[in-house]
Length: 466
Image (cartoon, rainbow, N blue to C red):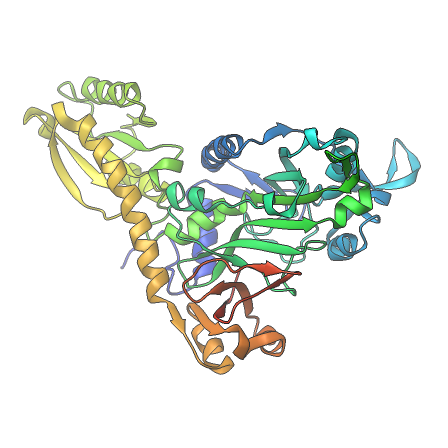
């Protein structure tokens, strides 16, 4: 009888494969309240690496971390009409606390534009206080109708940056370096249409990644809020002539959705594949049998890898079969595996296995540490190259809405915006297809004037999405 596969094949049922990977790679599980999730240690370790890499970049850009309250007075949200309208269906509202009905209901934050607006109005007095660049690592709550772990959950973790500027020209943020350099996800960067724009913004920029099944995932966004929130919350300052001016503000965020994107972009039928720069465990030293000094050699290799900065893990649990343990680490997507057994050790070598390609190489034990370090760089580059190749092969320029709908079943379609327009966007919506972003024909980000992208060569990137 044929052995049943550990995971549902991606080609057979991609969503089921995704759920299998989350469970069997021990990333997360459903929480006790519908739409919530429990992030397990291995999954949280990946999020911590993402958080550390993002936090360093945010601070390099000049922003400082703060923490603002989880609860927001309902009246704050109602001060920016478009914002509250956009979030109303997703709000969780507290009306009773301490056994008493509250005089004013409080909202569990769906995002923090309004409460940041209130504190910025107090903190900004003069042009000398600008720009004000703040960031918050927190949880948020949005009552999702169709939750999916990491991708859309009622509660999730994220960072949200909020800035105030003297002019609009200052107000731009982008995540491109992090997505490419760390996650190995070759995102498309562009601006959202009016339909897809963040509630209350005058412009939204987005990073759109292609997943393994050709669907899009919004990985991060950056919003120019113009002066809408500044007017609503009196965020103003005295300029160098003594004239009172309203600030220009922005917000930008990325969340635990990136963990789901990592799984779906790089995973294969054997499980997760984690880019080394974001891997919780970069290399596992796998002891085959604890005989003839192999256990001591494996422990020494693990220590040597840690000494050079590799996030290594020693697996000496020989009471479990070698095959089972190798499969488990493959499921978890650890980039490099070193297999240490008495037979190979007697010949002065160990086996190095790359998770991205499955290639096995015998390396001298004295050169194993250097070989692992080189392999980690190769795996990082290999995953980016593979994801880029898939994105490019599945991105097709089309000349009609009907062609765009056909291509979007398995990839991204590029269509002139002049050919699509608002009516075409409505037509796509009937097929559960959206304009992921608008770009220039060369893939660059178009200029936005009065809330609309401009340029004769505007193209819409069209796809199904998560």
